[in-house]
Image (cartoon, rainbow over the protein chains, first blue to last red):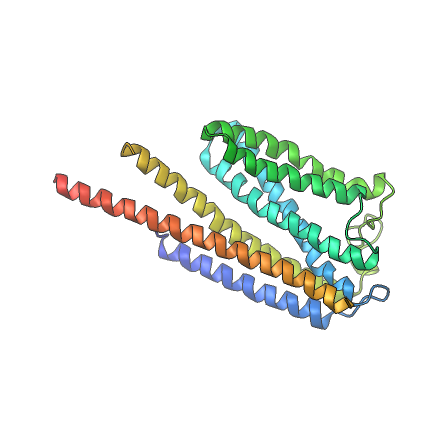
Amino acid sequence: MAEQPQPVKRRKGIFGGLALVAVAAGLYWSLIVAPPDAYQGDVQRIMYLHLPSILIAYLSYFLVFVGSGLYLWKREKRDDLLAHAAAEIGVLFTALTIIEGSIWGRTTWGVWWTWDARLTLTAILLLIYAGYLMLRSLIEDQQRAAGAAAVLGIIGFLDIPLIHMSVYWWRTLHQPPSILRPDKAPWENVHPTMLTALAISFVGFVLLYFYLLSLRYRVGEMREEIKARRLARGE
Amino acid sequence: MGPWGYVSLAYGIVWGAILVYLYSVKRRYHRAAAELSELESTEASAGHAKK
């Protein structure tokens, strides 16, 4: 039981290999093929990390939202394991988004940080899900911890539409979207080579994300099995 | 720092952090797998002893 069946291991290996190829292709397109931006120059290349990072964080929190909702409804451990694994990776990608944004902001705005609505709401998102992880480790009763974390996981997700709309609702230093705009198709606003670099980078991040998620989910599954076996043995 | 300095800093931090996380998850994975197979083998030997 400890070792996964051979076909599952092989599938994971293929998946990891594909992720590696896509990430390498994304780096090549982002750093070499894509042209520098007309106004920002080469610093704009941070976009090929920044946008995929935040989209992966959103995807993670969507999975936390779904897993938490299903856990509260059906009380099945696998849903809680999914939410927990996704939250951990989501926190990593949110922190990376803030760091990339800070470096990009230093060169374009002249500051590492400003209390802009979008930046502040993203920092709140990070705090909510870091709190989610802390909550799980602070409550000893596992079922209570999972239930409380699930509630926080669902409430935290409400911050994402606020982050998305913040650039429309408030006067922000952060620019409105260049690609996901309601009034223009992406290729009307961004150079096709830049769009291709972004798409390849995004595919690389998505593949890498699901590879990390499958590993992290399996760690949680094995830990549960160990706990159950130890309990059965009266340890 | 020039523009490529900032780009290198951002790419270095992001890929460095992702690699560190991947290493930490893989380590947890192998540790849990080893612990589980150890439990399985002690259970199996206890089962044989009973027979």
